[in-house]
Image (tube, rainbow, N blue to C red; front, side, top):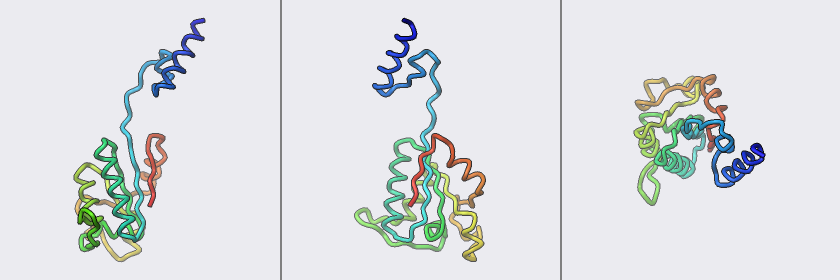
Length: 150
């Protein structure tokens, strides 16, 4: 009978959005930080902008954001790159990226970007690093990381 009550309690809690493990008396797990891993490769300014708008919205909601800039998307990391302003707010994708970084996002370029473009780390905006593939693969495979690729 006790097992039946635990199962019923777990089902009720699960239906209400809770944890069945907690309902079964297995203790409460610490809340894990929500994480968003964004890969940005697109050349289109609107696609870049919207991706970064969504990443900024996630950050504003308390989500930890990590951004990997690859291919054409990695142009945003270059200090001398000036993308067009986007309506309706008149901001550039680069400004959106900088805002994201000011709010704690980790931003990196793909490990193959610099050697294949003739740029060096000195050409990158302050605060943007070069990704280490093993570290990125480990991060993106974590079960609590949501992936967003554009």
